[in-house]
Figure 1 (cartoon, rainbow, N blue to C red):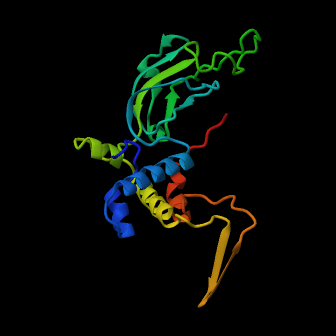
Figure 2 (figure 1 turned 90 degrees about the vertical axis):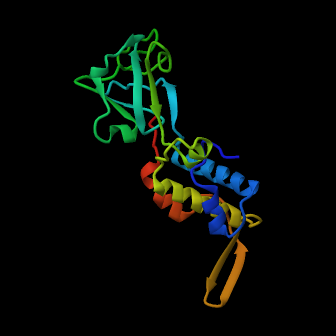
Figure 3 (figure 1 turned 180 degrees about the vertical axis):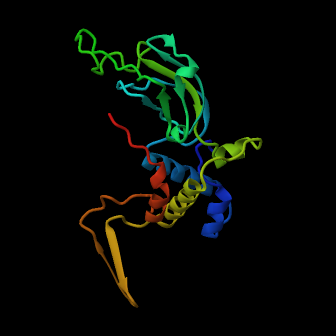
Length: 219
């Protein structure tokens, strides 16, 4: 059965592999989609009413976890509603998951009992900090399968990367990650590699496609 987090169409993967549709292919798509989301450090699927408690860092930009930001229901700072005219999603901010404070900065937390202004501390992630309620993410092929009224908005690059990953997962079944192979013309050799580390389920071509969609978080 399709999952809302599925990033590609099962029939496309089956066609690329030259195999019939089956529950096995559906599971493969779900596994590949999870691998892609993990590689990018984000969830792609659209959802409404998302609630987050981002850190303000005393800067104009807030970074939310489910870009693109489709709409913002409200922002609270220290328990007080921030007027909508005080923030914006202009330009590429929505696609990047960023909310900009106009003419000011978002609150920086104060360490409880320390009295150090601007230091992040015990208020982070609580109602005393910043709370954002919003709709975000892309409509995925999996969500389209579950609700035909939806229109897929997930970028084609991400969909293709998920297909490539699913195909590699299928073809790598039973292959020992510790075995490396090289070939020149008609001659080939297989040998045990020193390490299997760095063996990613995401093929190189897919990694290149996903490069613009990887989120890097600052802790």
